[in-house]
Image (cartoon, rainbow, N blue to C red):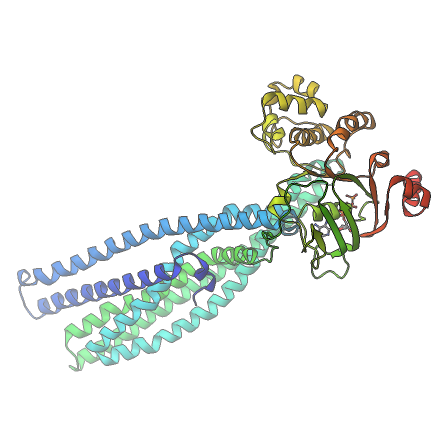
Length: 574
Ligand SMILES: Nc1ncnc2c1ncn2[C@@H]1O[C@H](COP(=O)(O)OP(=O)(O)OP(=O)(O)O)[C@@H](O)[C@H]1O
């Protein structure tokens, strides 16, 4: 009955124990209310004066007030607790997503991740505030009341005890039906989030292809499915609330009829009969409250499950014991039969039996057709992917991945499509080195061929770029990423993944002249389709279908007339 995921939330056990304690207190106050109310009524029935009943009536009111005060403070505490815990869960989710990296987000869908982190976490907050007091009340209050009813009238106690499991049974049946519907609804919700974001992102392309209308229908179809799933969940929820209300009312009526007969037959006094009758609705109330809120909390429960399943995802731990230090002439990295796949269930390896070794500084070119595994190799060298086994030897220390602080702190990574933040041009350029001086930033801007662009921008370096701001062309964005690289000359290992893909040949030639001096006394991996770079490389790796088909210096590969020459011919033919 209790969602086991709840126990993964901080301090949950103590909170549940505290709430159970409050439940006992509430049950005693409910009994107090019923006891003194029934006592006053039966005494008045017996002909006692109203003034003689002021004391029991006052105690009844005090119990009633105390119950409200207790509820008020409990709800206030729960609001704060749920808010704090939801905040912690969101932080844990974001930390985990950052650690799992871009491949994971791609797989799960950005829309889904965003909805989960924003809306999903509010649903968890709602879930905690609603479900916790309901669970504890249901587990405590009816039993304390039942014990008391047994002391007043055993037969009434037996009736309450017999009806209770029947209601529980209905609750379980309806609960299962609602859960199945809610699961479907949640899947639809995730699908809708992903689809909506994808459609927004791809709107321009869809418009160009004349497919926006078709996609509109697609999004409409998915929202319709989601609407239907929501409506059918609501139907079950309303039906189950009705059924439970009906059964609890019926049970109270059965108790009333029995008590009535006993009173008429003179087998029972008014006071205990009245007390049992007044307590009967309160006996069923926690059960009814739990069931009616159960449906309202299914979303929160589902989100909690999804978030914890993400938190449980296997990630490769940062290696702390391997020491790399600042890369120098004497350092060596060797990959021996390195294989890896993105998806553990996939049969094919994305990289297979990669063998490569390098000592000290140098420029290593990585070439191959699209899909041959160049980016995957660069990502592996960046510590974003883990090999099947410890096949990376770095300075004599074996490891399965390069996620090491010392290694990653000296990396500079320029991908094919660099991410430009919604921030000023200055902040985007000084991303790796926020303390950089104005002079250094301007020098980097100049080297990246961005000086003219900066001069033409309305607010120069302070112009906000990125999403929903001043737009730069693809080539200009690429140059912002290169300016980042030019600014931070302290990093020793440079990873370039087609950094000039969006540049025209003239701009690329200009930039090449400024980039090459930067590569001196560094370890550089440069993946590209543009073969003119290869003449400048100290070593070349040729890739095909995830394997290295050839490697060597430019001269060696030209003389061999093997895979590299074949690749050159292939590119000429395209
Ligand atoms: N995140 C991912 N999840 C699963 N498979 C992936 C992922 N990224 C790439 N792949 C697959 O791995 C293989 C190698 O891709 P990779 O991006 O490394 O090639 P590439 O040589 O860099 O291609 P390109 O020159 O087009 O960038 C491809 O078959 C691709 O479909």
